[in-house]
Amino acid sequence: MLREFREFAMKGNVVDLAVGVIIGAAFGAIVTSLVGDVIMPIIGAATGGLDFSNYFTPLSSKVTAANLADAKKQGAVLAWGNFLTLTINFIIIAFVLFLVIRAMNKLKRKDEAEPAAPPKPSAEVELLTEIRDLLKKS
Image (cartoon, rainbow, N blue to C red):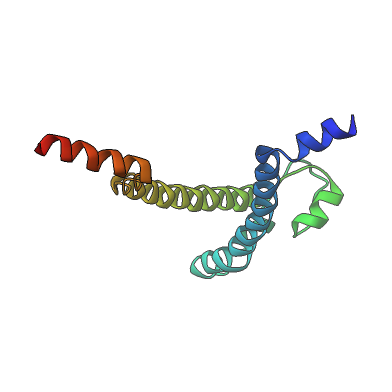
């Protein structure tokens, strides 16, 4: 059973998938930082200092807090600002993945367009070609 598991774990697809998940998690953290630390502050500055992450609509009359964390402690809230931030995050990730896949497709098409050099014939094939050419001359 251990041997079978080892064979399964060492298959190329499993290792490739694991690498993809790890890189995806790291890429997700970078994009989250890009959205939260760069893009949203710029949008906030352009809109007069608005911070979308703290925008919410109380669903209970008990909620009187000014920020989202305290409002969630007081009762049910609709955290639409956080949803907006995550939606922007998703759009950025989807756009970056589109650009990466587009670049990879261009490289693939470029590789397919360039014809590969024919392999050098073996010594036997070269000798047989010479014999054939000599027989044609005589």
